[in-house]
Length: 234
Image (cartoon, rainbow, N blue to C red):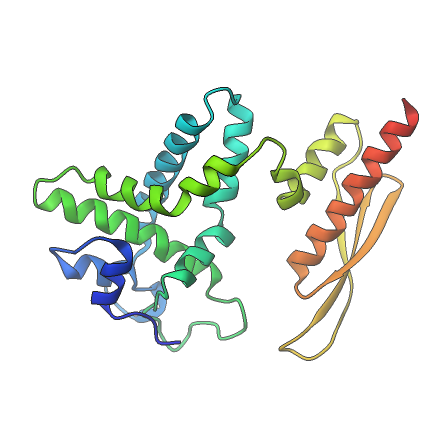
């Protein structure tokens, strides 16, 4: 997929760049060759995104404790969430010949570019004397507000199973979870990974189309096993 033209991307972002070079830089991966890339913008954009999402959560959930707000923010600003946002905008990165070509290789670079775009908008607005945070907050609000408003405490236990398992094991005085790839079968375009997850004497196996997803499914099953064991002991 070639991606949107700069004009179409500006329409999707609801922002017109006064300095088009900033948008171009935000989409320039480090592999594109000598010259500036988007990593400095990504650094700034990461901070802007975390602030804007934190403010949305703070406003939408006045009764939530700090831990719950942090959990929700983590879900909304993680690499996978940013990658999906970048895909929805049809971002097209400038890359070089040495960029890895295997499936999923651009997941992190696409997420970085999304953060870099936020920084580019911020700096572009500042250049003409406008409040840089205003258009960034507007963009983040359009994209995330519905998800923030509909969130409920505990929802991350299903979506962030590995972290939940680690925390649950620590609370029970158990060793840290361990993951082992048992097998990988199927063609390259449709692989099947089987993973074994273990906490103490408990272990489960799970399968999925990626190693990461198989670990998540296995972790979720172990959380359920731990919950059942704890309930049985009460």
